[in-house]
Amino acid sequence: MRIPSLIICLLFSFIPTLAQQCQLNLDGTWKDDSSTKTLYRFDAGKTLSVIAGDSTGPLATARYALEESQSRQITLTSTKGGPILGNGKDPVTIKSFDDTSITFLTADSNVIRWTRVDPNRYFITLVARNGEFYDSSGSAFPILTRISSLETVTDAVGTYSDVGTSVFGRVPAKTYIDFMHEPRSDSGVMLRLEINGAQYERALRVLQIWDRRVKENALLYQYQIPLNNIILIKAVTETLNACTDAIKLYKLNYIHPEDWISDNYSPQFIPFVYFSELKKLNGARHVRDEEFEHLYNPSAAMVDK
Amino acid sequence: MKRRELFSITKPSFHPHPASPGVGRFTNALLRTHENKEVRFYDDLIRGKQVVVNFMYAECHGACPLVTQSLIKVHRALKNRMGRDLFFYSITIKPDDDSPAALEHYARTRRANLPGWSFLTGNAFDIETIRFRLFGMNHPGFDLDAAMHAGTLRIINDGTNCWTAVEAFASQKAILKHISWADPPKSYTDRLLESRVRQTLIDKDVKAYGYRRDV
Image (cartoon, rainbow over all chains, first blue to last red; front, side, top):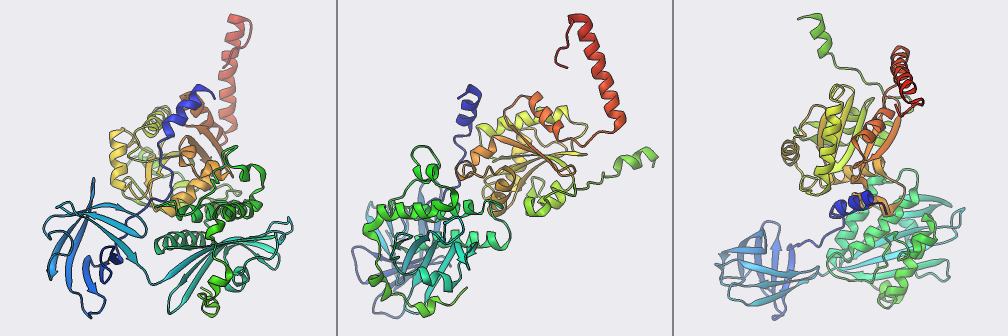
């Protein structure tokens, strides 16, 4: 490497990559790990409520303000009932957090851990096939599923086959429904993982951005369409690990020789091989058809967005 | 008003080349300048013009100020053209952090608030699209790394549909040469005049050294 090139690399080395960061999201319902019956709910209106499992109204409420300076702190002002967190006067420090839990440090040095309560279940299904298109590549896309007691919502964006033609965009329900079952041959691959609400929201955001890119003719690669799908699947899978190493990831970073997939395969085949590698790495966590089918309501999923 | 003044305030008209990719490639994203003025990326900034585009962000204390300093020198060398038929656009890669005010502060502190030079921000979606459309190398490994794009100056003349690029840390002479490659075609008289000047230099060299040096 020439010296000027080395200097440029060093100078630009601290330009941040646009990777997703783990973001604190207080909104929602939480339970204290040390108590099973009491629930705490942060709402967007900056109110924290304490709810007992068997009571109708909140036992206590407080207005809260989140300060994000050097350390994240919550200041609570009681509006009903006694203090909720700490002594009710001093701010409470957020010691650590991830997608599903948050640990507070009160002014009197008490450590309190809350876990998120979410009645919904979330899944990501990575599916790909070979031999569908003229160059023997095929469909490859992630499917996101949110299952609640009332409805099943499914989203899928990526490369799919429309009567044998490769199309990149939101996958129609009639197409993705065909991919919801484990493949019976080596020409298909599927990895289905149960994820949490925050992972689901982040992954859904990636799909929504790509759906918008397709609709607004704002694809990052206008002519090399398979490259868009590579960036999409890379972003969706990497966003799952934004807070913790939730899944074992393969580094699709185009660095030789670490990334042997991009070294050896053309762009249109990379998603298939990448999903196959993720299946190998995370096979133990794969949710099999038998477990998934009793949760999944296909009729709800057929509602195409 | 004198006739000369009347001509000096008339804005030049910019016409895109018939083969220009136009909005389809450049996008017509709504951006905001450091002067807090709303602009459309293609219609207001690119259409028919010769431009130099680079990426930076206001809180960057390493490479960006050096690139800006390099561009200031280039601006000085081309000051007669700046804002008339040549424009510099520095687009932030951190639009969520860089408001027009932050960019104005950056431009002012670096003494880069010069005619024909706009610092631009917008929404992350549009800026990422523009970054890939202008600097994309059809290689996700390079393109996902914003640093790869920040080290390059993209030179475009939409009037002649000419695209070129130069390393941001290249010498001033190299940057000027790359910009000149995208210059609009000169008239026959101008080319004749330039050739005469060059020939005089060559004749002088041959007389003094017996061979032609770099002119």
